[in-house]
Image (tube, rainbow, N blue to C red; front, side):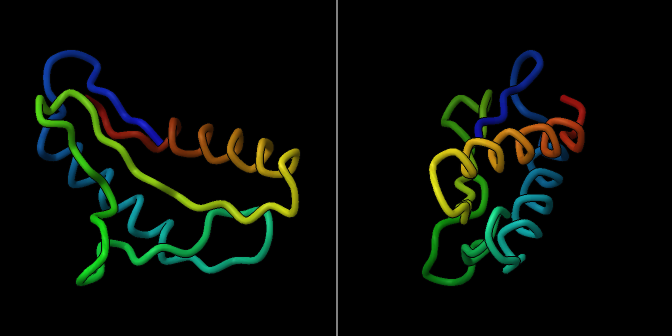
Length: 90
């Protein structure tokens, strides 16, 4: 998932909130059709959110576990809507 600043750089508080939200999602281990897995930035693994060098965007990789491509599309649409609704200001 790609997050971008409304203007300028992402605020540190926004990055912290995004990291908390993504870490919580990575910690879930629900069945098919949900975001699951990941290590939430555990030692030796990738960070849950990577901020661009210029600070205007952040990237989070969230695995999905749909049973086929069509189901994955629906899972991703739902995930995007949920993350958009929970996105911090800035």
